[in-house]
Length: 568
Ligand code: TYD
Ligand code: MG
Image 1 (cartoon, rainbow, N blue to C red):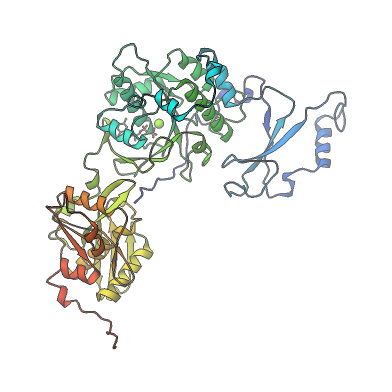
Image 2: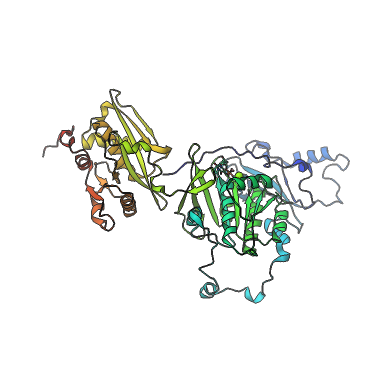
């Protein structure tokens, strides 16, 4: 199951340069210039030398071709940089050799012979270098693992996030925020990234009761301090957070250094810029160098930095993969347009597992942890399923979390062969229907079959096969399935039930939620221990016929196989 992220185009008023665009960058440490890129597939993409001479002559007719021989032109090195992934090549390629996108290689000229190159690392050192504690040269040597671990206070190493919401975030981070880490939080516009980070900032501030303790600084390049203050007000945040509105990384780091904060939040990476780096904020070079500067800042000061990143149309954070390589942790916030549920997922985590999933609900007072996450996808009608045929509960996993979701089926006699599926892969649905016809003897070929997964989820796991089949049987036979039965299992082409991964975890979740019965493959029944399952009947079935005879006992005998038995 994956909640798909919508791909909305990004529009931010600060995405483009302010009015001083023409003079950007303000100082003269500007070594790159963008060669106006032509279409890469036209033959003019790489102008011939004669064309170049003609251009020289046109721009400077007095000096003629080649310019003033006394004025030595600095040698230029040409790079071709992919605007999609940042891949840097010495020559032009029609298709980027890193990400495979066509026509994305853009030409960049780097002036040779100048020593003062600008990079995120260098700028960061310039900005905060003066107040960093000077490291003893003798300490800069390879250390033994035991030495490193001895100097680390494992208990207090991570910054804890308290409260139900904090626990949920900690769980995704692998147990709290790691000092000196750079965390990138991505997500669609409006999904709640700013809300989440403001809440995290409040949690960290509240955590240190000591009034002398360092504060948390929330820097926004998108909103004014009043707007952030207003949001904090709505969220009921009273913690002593420092707010700052700026887009210049150098300025941000300089201003922040005096506060020596416990954590720094930057909203967002697409709005900040580094002077001296080519391109407008949000451009691939800017985003990359700004992130490098923040990474260096985090590593050298041990201040954790939380960075918001907008997602591109393809669902990646600003220039796919570029930022994800630089940062320590990448979190994605997902949510559906019309649902208040939000999921926080780690796609990269240098300090923990990427299996964890945080589940929240967006309320009028911000994000709240969902207490009954396993049941949140069950529809309310499920309570009436004693009288409603065609409903079955599947047990699926997302990361390390178990969710019960409801599968709905509707079989309509008279419209032959028509099939409509929602939230289930059409091929899988076709397979299950065919197996039901052939191996269980249901005359589904004379029916139109509609399938739906409640809550707009997409079922990607085969563990839901059995619930799909059960829902179809229920609708076809017009016998409701009692609402305290759950189904787990994959269906094979022979109609046999197969094991699925993490059976134990699924079964225990079902038992914990008070279900009376759980239908599983026969092989799973033998392997599962009975501890904690006293109140639930675990029923192992070999194949679909077994399931039908168990769940629909009255109709079981009437279901006759339509295929002729093979004579010996
Ligand atoms: P926001 O954090 O601004 O999203 P992002 O930074 O990802 O663009 O959240 C915006 C949405 O959250 C907005 O549609 C309103 C909703 N929201 C609530 O429902 N409750 C709240 O308390 C807050 C602050 C926002
Ligand atoms: Mg925002």
